Image (cartoon, rainbow over all chains, first blue to last red; front, side, top):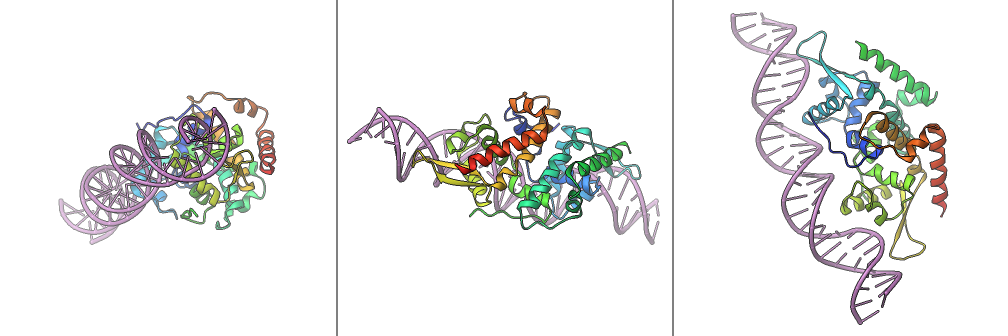
Length: 138
Length: 138
DNA sequence: ATAATATACTTGCAAAATGCAAGTAAAAAA
DNA sequence: TTTTTTACTTGCATTTTGCAAGTATATTAT
């Protein structure tokens, strides 16, 4: 059990105790928007996360009830990570990070997701939450 | 000039390059919701940020155009930090962190802000963005 | 049956970031 | 002229991160 220390009882501070680092939300991004679910897939992202950091963050996310880990259906040597409701509920946070980065950081490159967001924040949020819930049932 | 390294061109990743740590968004929280504007005020938060970390983060935030630093109106020995539009636009991110923490972390204590959020996310976001814009004019 | 590959980590070590306590410097107040 | 306020800076120990290599188990190939 990876336990985190809580700095205060403020909801923002407590959220950051869990999600406030450079890697955690990228794992969730890959699950939500790229449909990734295995250790090997997470390692292939453009940001090149180190293997030990990934293992550590997955353990924290699991112990915090944000995702679940299970042996894959096809292979016993593989694990499948899936989002819980607590994990699915981080999607609005991630969407706001997309919008802020797109609006204010000139070096970001437009993505399909960004294009999609032209059609409204609520619709896109609901779409990916629905998709994630379907995946959670597999 | 504090320069940050950008890990990829993904908007989420780039936003996290700037905002993705345990302290930066707490400074912005204190500016937006507690009306704080000076180094001394930031140090007084419940989370007890170290002085060197605070100085470092303020320098990053300034160099990233998220806030501005100016000599205070009343004293020459004091500085006043104010949000730019880029800073004001982080409010939706912070609001989502509040909602997630309140919903999923049982150890957080209800705040006035949370009470306010019962009346709708959009209204509260607009209120604090308007307040921040007024402050930015001072 | 045996060897090679795939998958998911763990380990060791150097580098960087954080946290803590104390010190500095300029302006304001006493 | 001394003391206090305000905003940092510095030095050092601890923690976290990043990198490269190694391990362990299951699957596939020969």
